[in-house]
Image 1 (cartoon, protein in one colour):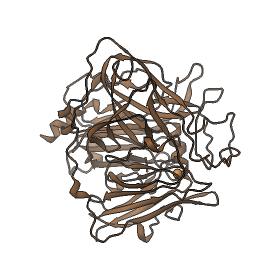
Image 2: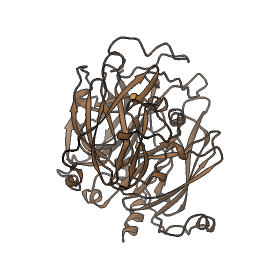
Image 3: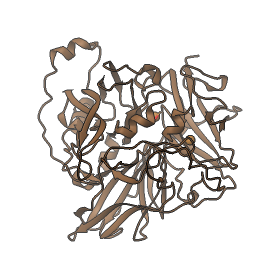
Length: 516
Ligand code: C2O
Ligand code: CU
Ligand code: CU
């Protein structure tokens, strides 16, 4: 029963080679799953059912991103071995890996092949999976190696993603292209009848810099990380997207290494939010602008032609870069390459939408999700929140007062399986302070409290602390308390800054979930 629902949901949304936030054309090729090749059957333990099984190769590739010479990228390519072909949707005009579509409760088996010249490993960002499937850098495989994942998709419907996660090289590998979307659906979401097919738009935002020969230039700085000159959408140059008027669903991922977006519609319409990192909110609500930090996702309702539109840009409003507030000029100096980066906080026009026709206007459902189990989030009485300072020593980024150690775990980083804990991230503020998007692996968490620092920034009113999250932006001077349940899997997991250069430079730690 469950399995049939999974197959049905995973079947056939073929991504067109459209440009910009691309639409799924909703082709439904309801053919039965291909028989599993014997070689694959031999290589896996025949213990459990599998709903989708595929090879995922990380390798070098080149494609035509700009006029002129092709651009060399690193890219994931996938091949279904078992299950519906529609579970992987590859867009050949993009450097992103295939969009993976799975159903909650489905079992995924992935055979990662490393065809790069260096070690890598894949992490499923936002999914709650066992420690061996989580892409911890200690499982990185050498060039030519293979790694198999086998896990159940427990997460609610939502927009998740996957990306390379080797120690010290995550920023560089994601920059070259090693990332993709992973979309989970479930029965509750299907009942809502949200816009799908060509009315579901995927928007992966990433900034890149190209050299004169159209090659990607990676020139990170120790402080701000990497900030590119050009925002790409779905691994391509954005071009005007023409669409029928009426409601659309936008799934927006900030897949940038270091850039924060403060999203708004150019015509002043409000953004209607349906969901966050961990899926749908209980009810939709409206905001004038919404901050999307690296690693975060937003689910947005856009009734093009009625509000916003009919000719409108998704843009990023200007804000004061929390990292340059003190005017220390600390973003210059260490950069090689030809250009001054487009600063964090520079106003950006991201994607233009032009709505055509007289499509009916519609409001989103008044109630979206009721599946939030609030009781699962009560902490035991008298247990204090753990405090994890954010900081730096010399030119090294720290978390919990220490740099990353591959297997290292401090006393306060030990957690009992099944526990609910409050963790607070404290960003000290002061002249060297920056905004840090802190990501915790494993289950989604709630943001319980945000004590605002004195440094005021235009960003603050656009920060969304509702819903389920796996990444939270901690502004300079802020103390943010999250609550998380460590329910399902023992083992070693990561929490870190999702400014990928900060992560690579040590702003990452382990936590160990222990069975008593
Ligand atoms: Cu998306 Cu540990 O990262
Ligand atoms: Cu993650
Ligand atoms: Cu950081």
